[in-house]
Image (tube, rainbow, N blue to C red):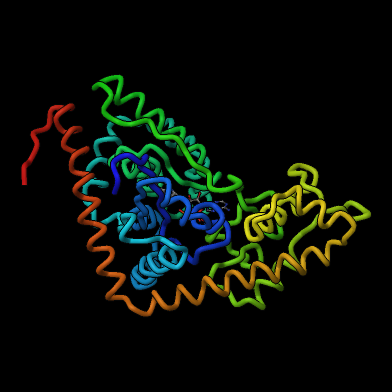
Length: 337
Ligand code: ATP
Ligand code: LTN
């Protein structure tokens, strides 16, 4: 990695089938992003075990995500691609940072509250400490820029609080990261309830487009997506009054490369069904191409394993430098290998 470029970190949990939200949030612009930053891409498997998972499903999802990253243009010679649990320093730093995080601030996190309701029989302390592990992911690499979807804002604020707290006590040890919301910075919303985030753990699959979904099913779901009830129908971006059409305009804009204003002009005298036909065909076609690339990578698990072995080695070299500095600053002896 070139030392002149800023360091960018991004991660995806292997918590289910990836969605269009994940794609637009963090995967759609990887080629450009790698040109501009020194990148680390991580499969956040330790984050995923905050919820009970079937071991073989979890194992396979980790390799699925590696293959998706590659299909989206991640170049392993240019960027570091690794699995979080292979770099032990994440868990070590996380323990230390837990001692600098407060139960009050962690229990106020919206994601913690939502997941506690969703998994009310398993409100484990990993769910509460989840954002501290996320802070460790980022801070270990002296990350300048975090690539995350717009839904992670609250966790980023917590990372800032931890950095300020730690740096105030021990000097400027951690870099204060900023966030890069890819392309539009949009949060992609659920198809049938555009006031809710599109999520892989959503039980009603009609709300979500999965990256590996059949083209015909993608077309059907977009055609059924909730639009707004104003008459006559108008294809105008207005997040508050027209959340359904605005969500589809965001998606259309990313997939077509056209601005939202261009799309509004192009469809000013068209009806919702024509608009939906065009966007659904475009999304289905582009995702079909992505799927072909994905299947090519996914069938060679040995190759994927080689990539993550190399990625973990490179990531550890960087992570150990930061962890040693943390040890020294808080009074723990450093172990030299
Ligand atoms: P879950 O639904 O299980 O909580 P998730 O998809 O929200 O999963 P991750 O897999 O960890 O969580 O998300 C990976 C990245 O994709 C994150 O940076 C997240 O912000 C982004 N992302 C997820 N959903 C959306 C969405 N609807 N719109 C934009 N970005 C998203
Ligand atoms: N919590 C994130 C995934 C994640 C992450 C990270 C994102 C784990 N560690 C570090 C950016 C940086 C989510 O989207 N659910």
